[in-house]
Image 1 (spheres, one colour):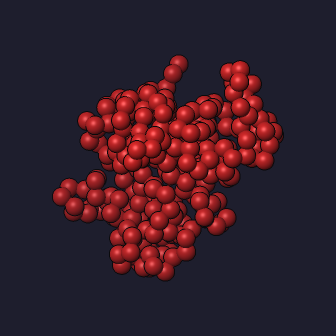
Image 2 (cartoon, rainbow, N blue to C red):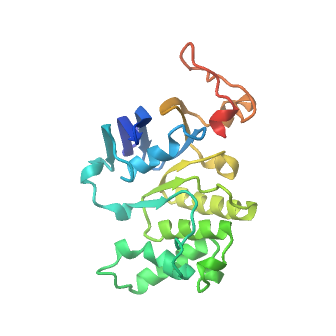
Length: 256
């Protein structure tokens, strides 16, 4: 029985400037699924994510969230978004708690925090192992800690769908392990996840499906490359057993 679609892209085309970046891609993410977008730099992974959250306009095709056309979708509290790695405060002086609290505003009434909201902020900080840094300025954090704060900000609204753009990029091993444990807990609680990854790393056991993009097209949609055998790993050539005749191997560049 097919899972209820939480994200559905059909024939989506997008351009940056005059350059085509997505060329009619189809992508469906069912409720409770964990789907990884893989591909070389410039393949369209991040653009696909940004079309879903409305940051990049679509020139053709349709996008639905929870069965609603994205242009009409308003219930953004159901969606947690972690952009590509950036500074948590964007250059504005702020504490860790202030940054995470900003992600809770969609759940408050008129921006007034109540006991449940403050508890949600504390819980989100605990999830990412940053409760002991709650009062610290984000300027004092390492890159990995910044990323933990951004993820806590996405989680604090208790989203049903979590969209993450390269959450492990440039993050130290200790933070990668914390983030993997955090994501595992979210998945076990039923959260649907779509994430762009440079490599599967410690998240590999959580991935249900991998969608590999190349030149704005879907090259592979199915088991993660590692699940297809050792030769699917970066550094090895691999042809998906069900790929159409003439399909090129999944090479190192697709996963780098």
